[in-house]
Length: 348
Ligand SMILES: Cc1cc2nc3c(=O)[nH]c(=O)nc-3n(C[C@H](O)[C@H](O)[C@H](O)COP(=O)(O)O)c2cc1C
Image (cartoon, rainbow, N blue to C red; front, side, top):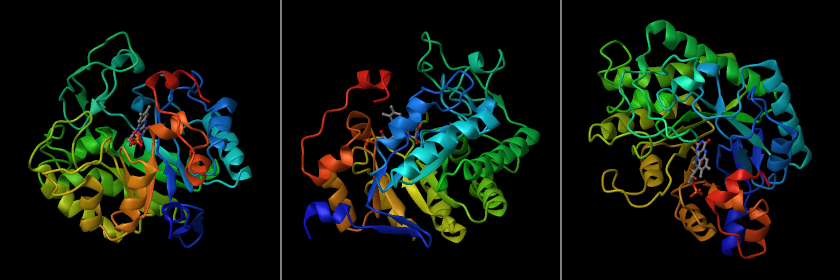
């Protein structure tokens, strides 16, 4: 089989969900929704141009207003947002593509400018060091620790967002449990110092995520549910040696959840001493279902990962921003345009 053929084999993600190739468009925040966080026609056109990917995962999409941490990132909690996303999913389906909604709450990776002057919330009142992107150099603030009511409300917001995703015509959802955002903040020692039933022990630290999965599954039994995880803290989070113990338990527990897949959240998925391989290899070792690799993969790297069975699918991020025709270019072995952060100012 030639290299390209490996990437162009179809893949049965779930019984009723056949992907036409192994190339996934990674979730990519573009901050181009309206001020009401509604997806626009330009966004529908942008995604539709990329519909020849086996699967598109949408940019991170807010489950509630209190989850906002970036300007003009879309939501899935108002009727106008659902209507906006419908245009996106219809455009993709017209072009014979498939799309999952990545649903998201930023937790402490936010600022009071998004919350009428109130500080954001997080598992514990522990500040993230650094500056808030896309602001005038504002520093992160110490968040307020979530109380049990907040936890219940946010879980139900994930459930509502999943139902809204289904109504908007998405082929599934991806729960954003990676990259240092709210769910990830419960899963890492750096950000979770709670002493109640959501912190301390591994069981307690996993509880928020597992309850979301259980509740979403119960509310939308026919919806495919993927999950993105960052076992190696690398973004918006400090490493702690104890994290691996949790992910060993979590990944094997997730085998019981009938997920569509687990997706590596990593910018550069290279060998990692701590996990004894790449993050994707580590996930593969501990989880039996479909694995999506991600983080600096060229098409050749993707072929290598699939042929060596480290991953079933490979998500491509920045090259998809630079090349709307990424899939055709790979198929026809044409040269890719190199990604440049300047490209983030346009939605082509
Ligand atoms: C501009 C930009 C926006 C991103 N937005 C998201 C996002 O919304 N959700 C997410 O899980 N990851 C996000 N990521 C991470 C990508 O999904 C991907 O993991 C990362 O870019 C590494 O893959 P690549 O080397 O193929 O670009 C973003 C990355 C970039 C560069």
